[in-house]
Amino acid sequence: MGVSKKITNPHHKEILKLIVSLSGQATEHTFLDSYLGNSNPRYAINAPTLRTIAKEWIKDHREVSSAQFEKLLTSLIKGVSSTEKCMAGVLLDASTKEQRKFNPKVFEAWLDHLQGWAEIDTVCTGQYSKTEIPSNFKIWRPILTRLSKSKNINKRRASLALLCSPVRKAHDSKIAETAFQIIDRLKGEKEILITKAISWLLRSMVKLYKTNVQHYVDQNETLLPKIALRETRTVLLTGKKTSR
Image (cartoon, rainbow, N blue to C red):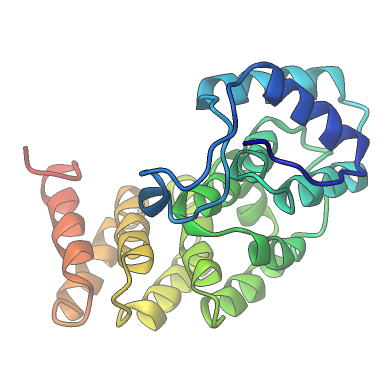
């Protein structure tokens, strides 16, 4: 089964050609669908190979402007395969400081084309969110708030995932306040896409905001998802996700 869609972006064509040349046949509707959270077709290529493609491509295309880079990422995210969508996140990780200077509001549109934890987390976590969200939080704060209030569960997941890297890097009261506000807004949801993300964000905050996290989980122990409460308290006590 092949993945076909007319692609107009030349950089997208170039990258997809590299993916195809280094992978097997694209697949769809496999046993991984429920685990990854989507049924988009995927190429038989592993993450280290995608990272190598991204690093080499960025190395050879450092002249690509932020506007051109945004158009490339948009094209990939609108692609047919989950591999193309995730490649956008891998490229974001490898991109230059200049290439990252696009308007972050584009994430709201991108998330209309992402589904499930694998696609969302690959695009929304890593070096981009770690560096750009703290340095541009005045712009990012309303974006995160809107995402957390969206009817689209994938956008609500993203509002949590986007903060996981920044809270491990930056000790910033405004970032922490926003993180707790979003957790508070979503703590009553039952879907694992949200409950696991709440746990992830709380655990990510322990390093720099341990006292705040301890107080929050104590005050909300009957309201937080059980998995988030259990995993966060384990990290608070042992520094590890599990007690094993």
